[in-house]
Image (tube, rainbow, N blue to C red; front, side, top):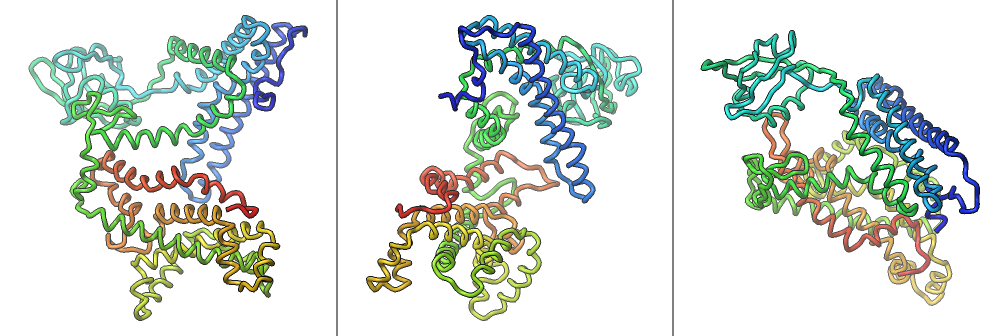
Length: 525
């Protein structure tokens, strides 16, 4: 219990101990909160000011550093509150009032310091927001202009108080839709507004501007959230901390899967909310799934059966060959000593570290040459399922060989010696004695290989033409067009359809999949 509660409960105060004074505890809580703030600020600076520019120098466009910077700044206040509340947790068993008072005091002070930083840096609730510099209200006739800022974007464009906005270009909008469209715009973007002035219908283009509206009243919801979060941290059992941290780290992935499931069964979505054609809650439908089996998505006609069978064929062939070759090579490297063995092991590890993308052109030439071989060229050449599976096997084998060697290394020699003394051949010893002992490793590697082949995209997309040998990931990418509208709900349905076999594998074989990290087994079956 002490080990599980170490995150928060290492400094519990005993009943007969004399605690520190409240000011001393407050100073310590603020010190821990300040250290937390400093660490996350340094991390954000490293992501955005050091690592990001280094990628930019190489001409690499990436968004990971920007995402990490935003996540660091988002977590900053909460980590600071946890640091302050950790001091207050000492008194949760002896003096609850003192614990809450200390925790809330440190949280309020840290909240004030962080909010002051946001105010100065125009960040958070004080960040500039998109605006047309006019006040609007919803009326029966449309969106009424109640006031305009003198010299602002709306007045410059010619809008006046009393105008009634009915549409943006040809799209009719109400006030909620107008605000959503405005929030999705960038500084300088033009919005072509249709509005009525008396009996006259006019059109004017208003450009979006960024305005900073620093109203301190916007801080109250944040303060209430901070105090509620602090109260939870104060009374949170210590052994819950790892699970909460795990859920927090996995929350983007969980939300993503949740959205995919909702989107596949709804007409459209706004975030995680399913909507119908009139933007009302609901709109649940099975048409997205129907379009997969009918074979028509956004005008693209297809047959899902051969695409599914291509994915299955690549995954099955890859799994079979990887298991067969890896197990035999792993046995030879583990049990036999021959010239070049150490070099082969090192070379295999180097091959596993080679990025696949650096070998795309050489492999393309090899597949073209293989296609010219009589009879088998039609099976393993360019634009064939066998050729794609062969390339996938080549990239998977180094990892498979090393894993199988690790499992064979952990089988006692006595078992093999007994079989050989009894007259069994090397092959029979390998096939009937040793392979059953590494069954968990074979299952784990097989599942790993199947998932890799089922989800493969770069290799099938590079070495196939048309839809004849397209697998599901390649087909899924074909549904996304940069110029034509994309029905993301139907795309999500295809994505979930592709994930179904993976879910089945994880449900029934997750125990064996975890064995792939064990490195071996001691004779268990």
